[in-house]
Image (cartoon, rainbow, N blue to C red; front, top):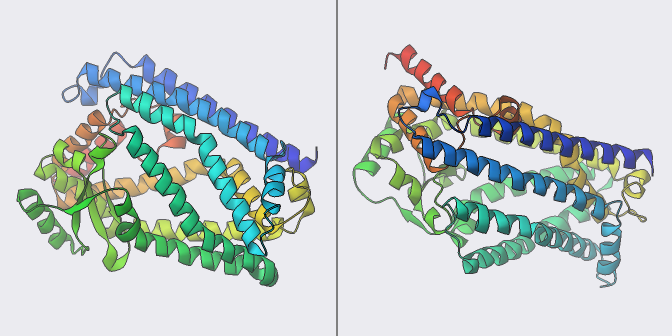
Length: 418
């Protein structure tokens, strides 16, 4: 065992232990407050709903713990356990020339990994989500989604992987810079293409019907000077009772999408307030800022990979006897989450600041009380805990905890005189 092997294993154990500890704190914190609704929500959420949220949170945490331990086991099996070495031998026997062999190796790795993680997802969907009344998926629909996802992965990833491997092979020492440029262009292309070509493969999107809700939304868009490629309703109820709304796409391809479940939960004024919050993200440039951060971090990642790919110990310490470009890419994707785990609370802190700014924008451009009532409804309908452990929340939640967010909204309303 090399020092590099020891380093990876140590960080993997620390990351897993941290996840388990934070999960323990969250479960203890939530269940200890199960029998009393927080004062902030006492008039709007009843005790049975609060208890359901606590039990739902506890059940998901238990499964997440199993998922974390299984993920650690898979990391060890793929690396020091010889899994990648075995897979390389299997795919090499196909005798594919050039980058084609590397593409086959990586596609096989992705598909096997997906299948190995499938039992956890199946249990989450058909046991936990079903037990708490959220799952709407049939086995046929679930299987159909999985087949589509695997086919899309093969169709989309194959040319990208081929191009990356070709750059690694022939673009010289600066291949990582060209690779980053390729990846950045691909990511922007997917953001543009997703709403038009990919999302409709899984859901139906229909224009928001004429009526008071649409009139309110269009008036809000005019006030805020926001232009989109349409207002759509997605049949989210085919898969889950959870509700949501989101923006997707770039430039003129931007779409505003509402889950049908959300429109059933909220009235027109509340829907307008939720959309005003989302518009706040665009007004403050949060989407562009997050995109720039992603591009900068990915540049650093490619630069690091460019160096690691030239180091023999990078391969030998993780179970690969013969260095290769496809092995370098795969190993990097496997181990990076182990080392970047510590960055999560920093990114969440940035995200929470954005949420506060978007909430303030919503209060200024819509009804703050309606936003509060819509959030309370979504907390209740989605069985979101109202009493998260602060440390767990800092590490896992990109949005502020419910009590803090509601308090901030009330402060914004006081400042604006609303």
